[in-house]
Length: 164
Image (cartoon, rainbow, N blue to C red; front, side, top):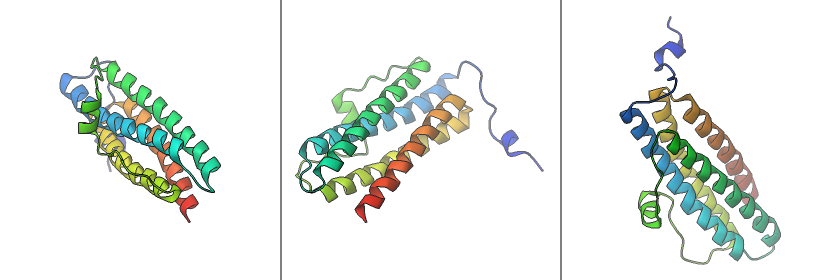
């Protein structure tokens, strides 16, 4: 019986081929674009939440957009490791992102449901980036994405519980 670790590609030391790094960078740019649209959506929700849940959600949305800002920076820096610039202007961000902007007023409950919907999209893009990292033996990207997935799953649980 073969050990599962021998089935995966071996971890790389320093340096990836252009094709390896391009595949990972493309996947990471999509994750980054999703987080950037999500970030702006959270800022909007933070400023505009109203009602009896104002204080709680105002604070939670602020926590989330601050975390998202950190994630965006971590992802951009990971892309730079490959010698690729994470140049994304707003047009690029909106075209790459599967998280969509919102242009209407939402109730507090609608805002939380929208955040949960974004989490599903972001989670899927992170799984794609994780698969790219696993296929190329990129343990550092694997570690980064696993941390982001863990954080996102916890927040998903918390917002889902809040909705009940």
